[in-house]
Amino acid sequence: MISLGEKAAQNGFRLSHVEKIDSTSAALMKDALAGATGPQWLVADEQEDGKGRRGRFWNSPKGNLYASLLLTDPAPSEKIAQLSFVMALALRDAVVAINEPGVGPTDDDIEVKWPNDLILCDKKCAGLLLEGGVKGQSRFVVVGLGVNVLSHPEKANHPAGNLNEWGIHTSVEHFFPYLSDAVALRLEQWAMGQGFSATRQDWLAHAYKVGQDMRINTSTESFVARLNGVDETGNLMVDQMGRPRTITAGEIFPLDMNFESNN
Image 1: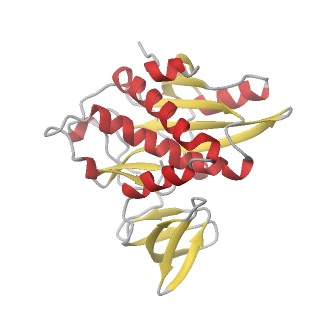
Image 2: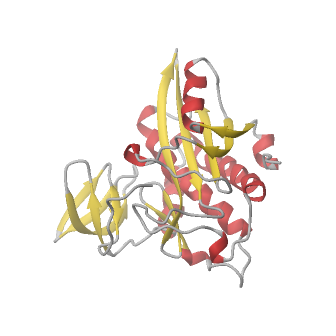
């Protein structure tokens, strides 16, 4: 049985669980446009039409976590994108909480990758996607999360892995309460954007490949640059052959990988 953690329940989060659905995020978007309000979790055992970034299909076999969270008026519109950092840190917090020292990876092997992935031992094990809209006078955001608990795709836009293969022996039922509590705590820290400086500091402490050269893909170009971190609003700061640049939207990849496939 899937249940909320104690902190999440205390903070008024609600939870619905279904065996199979087209997409948890699509369902919550529809609900929000019909007047539903958050904070509301929807968890599915399987998705038939899960989506990743840039409309990619998200492979969704049974045994992994597929969840979406509806938030109503979570922050001013200019701060909404910061939720990627909040939720990525919550994913990391939950994995660290269930990781058994000496059996699973070290804490340093559990990293966050700009803008919205969780990396475990250099492999992607979780990702998230923000979608939003307006209903009446309220703005809502749906955060979709996918966590590779028992399995992972063989072909992905970043080398993929799962929690159990690295010694983090868990299940969706065991993992989700930790995740829901971590989300509740990280949202409190963020404080609707007012606490982003603390969120940013924590994120940078566990950031993937900062200080190294990576391939940067945006909607208009692909180039190699050194990752310098993120600025006070969450934009990626890079150095391209001695020229500082700020990237507002895009993806980063190791230099030696093929990033043309899905997930």
